[in-house]
Every structure is written in structure tokens, then in C-alpha cells.
Amino acid sequence: MRTDLPVGRCGVTVRNPQVRAVSAFFPCYNDELAIPTMVRGVRRALLASVERFEIIVVDDGSSDGSVEALRGLQGEVPELRIVEHGTNRGYGGALISGFQAAVEEWVFYTDGDAQYDATEVTALIDVIGPDIDIAQGFKIGRGDSWYRKVIGRAYHHTVRALFGLHVRDTDCDFRLIRRQLLERVELVSTSGVICVEMMWKLQHAGARFAQVGVSHHQRPHGRSQFFRLPAITRSARQLLTLWWTLILHPTLTNHRRRSTTTTNRIHPPTRDRPAYEPNPTATAD
Image (cartoon, rainbow, N blue to C red; front, side, top):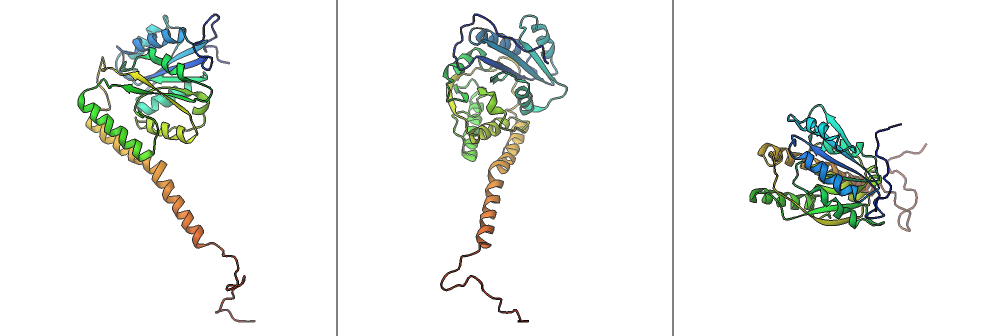
């Protein structure tokens, strides 16, 4: 039996009776200067909002002092757990680890680079009702340079068209998800393409969405790993692979099956065609 799980707190006024327990996690890669702000922010918001919570940071093989900074923070934040990857597994790999580590009824995650305000998790909590499975953020303005905004919008419209996604901002990694729903899908992408895979699979699993505008700021420290030519090329290749796997290949397979079924269909007898049609080349015994 695990003894490191969070316990309930008496006397807490629950912000939304539908959301009483939250696992909050952040993927972290060389975010030494930003990740403490994210941890403190989400803790402050959840202390005032839910009965029980945990905070998980998945360090994806950082080469800076991220892990040391987190260990130093554990004395201040007793709810904090650290999941360490010995080598970098990619953004998708970090998300998969975070989802697997989460234990509470609701799972909140956002990036560890402080482009989102973790205290705005309360905006997601507020829109959850009995008929909602995912509170999905969308950026109110984008805190990036003009060319990143152009690439971001082009990416969004491309994936929305290719995959038939209904969410307003697929690329907004600010989500509160019912954990029971996450257990019904298997995520395999290890890059940022996991966001498309996750939205497509959750949508096709019958997830019910509520969408909320959230703030998006300039990255305060470090550089994004996505907006570089090699990363963009790699993501484009992985996106096409995902499209083939989820959309095109099943469509072609189903088309072939329908064609085969039509070709081999046994027609019922009619007045002009008897139930048994003898083979004209057969010889009688």
C-alpha cells in the first residue's frame, strides 16, 4: 500500500462539488527557473479549491538544475512528487508518464515553462459539471513572436482539417480531464503530436468538452524546443504518420472490406435466377 499519497483536508470549502480531488502535473525539460513558480501557483489555487490534491513534476532528462530545484521545493510543498526520466523521452513521453502517475479523479496538466498561469486551473474547475469530461483551454492571445503565431495557427488549422477535431485550440496544453476517461484510451506518441492523438482519441471515446479562455505569456526563460526547423520537420513527419494510422489506413481498410463483401455477396434467388445454378462445365456421373 502506498503511503505517499495526499490525504483529505478538513474544513476546505470546495469550489465545485463536481471536482473534489485533483492530480496536477507538469512536464519539465530544462525549466529550472520556471518550474518552482508553476508548482507554487497550482498549489495556491488547489489549496483553496479542492479537498485533496497532489502535484507531480515529470522531469524529462533535464541537463540543468531542474531536479535539484524540485527537490529543494519538496520541504515547502509536501504534495510534490518528482518523476525522473534518466534520458529524454520527448514531450509525449513526459505526458504519458504524468498520466500514469496521477491517482486522483481529475487530472490537470500544463507545461512547466510558465507560458501559462497555473493558478487559472480554477477557471477549468468552475466549468466542470456532471455532463463534462474535459475542461479544455484556448489561448486568449498568444504570447509569442509573430512568426510563431503564424506557424501555430497554420498547425492548428491543418490538424483540425486532417483529423476532424472539434476543439477550438488543439495546441493549448491547459487541460483538466476526468481520469476515468484517460483510462479508456492508449496514448503512444512521444512527441508534441501526442496532443492531436489525445484529442482525437478522447473525442472518439465520447468525451464531452467545455472550453475556457486562458492567458498565454511570453516564455520567461529558455527557448522552445518546437519552433526550430529540425523539430518542425520531425513533427510534420510524425503528424503524417499519425494521420495515416488513425484516419487514412482505417478508411482504406474499411473500403476494401466493403468492396470484398459486395463482390462475394450471395444473391437471393429470384424468378429469373434459381437458388441453385449448375456449373455448365461439370459432367454428370
